[in-house]
Length: 66
Image (cartoon, rainbow, N blue to C red; front, side, top):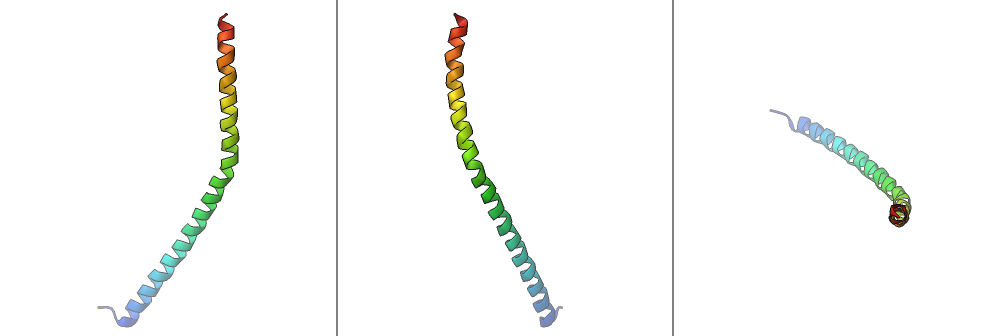
């Protein structure tokens, strides 16, 4: 059976490891959120370009059939 001192040391070690892991996860989450934010503008631009190109393609196809 473990002594109270051993249990204390074990519990402190587990706490320290969990806190360190949490900090790492929070850092990774923040980095991923920043990456996602940086993608917003290019996505909006590409969506606009796709809409315009789709309009051009739809206009040109009937003209080719003539």
